[in-house]
View 1 (cartoon, rainbow, N blue to C red):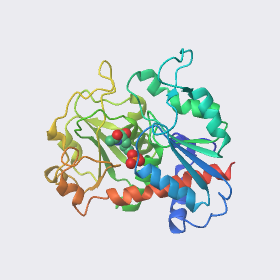
View 2 (cartoon, rainbow, N blue to C red):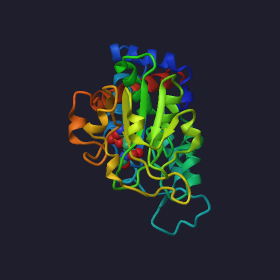
View 3 (cartoon, rainbow, N blue to C red):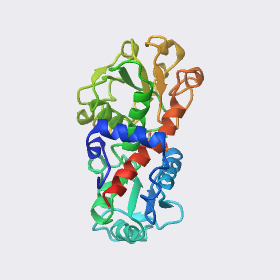
View 4 (tube, protein in one colour):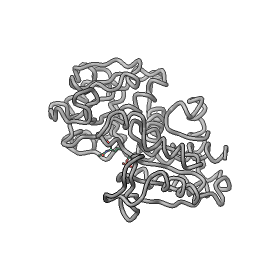
Length: 317
Ligand code: AN0
Ligand code: CP
C-alpha cells in the first residue's frame, strides 16, 4: 500500500482485519520492519488518541517518529497558490511539504475540514497536496472528509464484540455546542458499507450526510425507532453538510442525547464513540460509564489499526 486515506486503500477488508488480529496477538513481531525508518506526524489540529496511538504503533514496528504541531512553533502556512504573501503567513505549503518529505520515510497528516469552502474540504485540498508534493507515502490521521484509522479501529472493535454474524449498527447524531466535521460519520459509514452488517443512520432533518458516504445505509429520522433492536450504538455529532448550512450548527436538541432510556430500546447494545466526548451533551454519564460502554477498548484499538496500516506501508516502501 502506498497511501492510506480511505477504506478502499486497504484492499481486501477481511484480510486486513485478519492482519490486525495477528498484530494484536503479538505487536512486537515486526520490530525489524521499521528499523531506520522515520515517521513524520503533522498535526494541523489537536489530538490525544491519534498522536499517542500512532506513535506507539510506529514504535512497535521499530520506527523513529517526529511529531510537528504546525500551529505551535512552525511557520504559519499559506495554502492558496497565487496569493501575494504580504500577510501573517511566512511560508507556503508548496515548499513546506517537500521539505518535510526530505526528513522522513512516511508522513501522517491531520487536517480537519475548515468549513470555509465546501469544495476545498470535500476535495481534500490539504491532504492531496501532501500526497502530490511530499514524495512519500501519506496516511490520513483525520482529514477533511474521513478518519480512516478511527473507522478501522471501530470495525476491529465491532468484530471483537459482536454476538451475531450480521449485527445491527446504528450511527446516531447527538448534540454538541460547536460545529464538528463530518469526517468521523462519513468514514464510519464508508467502512460499515464495506461490511455486510445491518447499518442505520439516524439524525434530525437537516443533518443529511453526503450521499456518497451514506451509500446503502437506511436513514431513519426517528432516533428511538432507529435504536430498536440495535447491537451497537455509535454516537457522534456533526455539523450540517447540505447547503446553505454547510459547516453550521442548526440544532442542539438535547432530546438526541444518548441516555439509559434510549439504550433500553436496543438489544442490550454496546455504546461506542471515537472520543473526545462531551458528557451529558452526546451521552449521559450513566451510559458512558455502563458495562456496555466500549469506548476505552475502542480507543485501545487505535494502536492496532495504526500498526496494521503502517506495516502495510512499510512492506511496500
Ligand atoms: C473531532 C471531530 O469531531 O472530527 C475529532 C474527533 C476524533 N472532534 C473534535 O474536534 C471535538
Ligand atoms: N478519536 C480521535 O481521533 O481522537 P483524537 O482527536 O484525540 O486523536
